[in-house]
Length: 60
Image 1 (cartoon, rainbow, N blue to C red):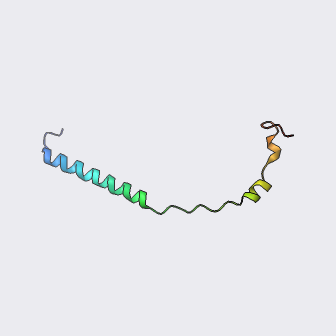
Image 2 (image 1 turned 30 degrees about the vertical axis):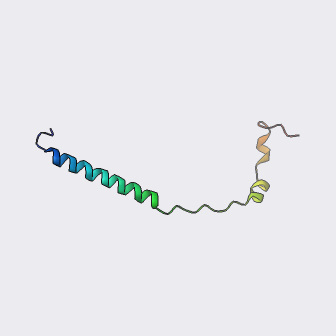
Image 3 (image 1 turned 135 degrees about the vertical axis):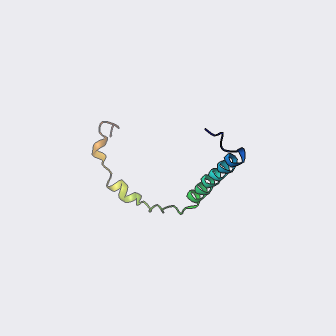
């Protein structure tokens, strides 16, 4: 199957493929990440579903 291709062609295609993968990886790594919103801990504790904890934690 690969008898018709010389080793130079195979190595150059492999090098081009590795270069494309490396460029894609660098592009993915340097892409700006979405900023996480700040969490309001007081509102989270105030609105927590404590009524669902009766089987998990013994409330005193």
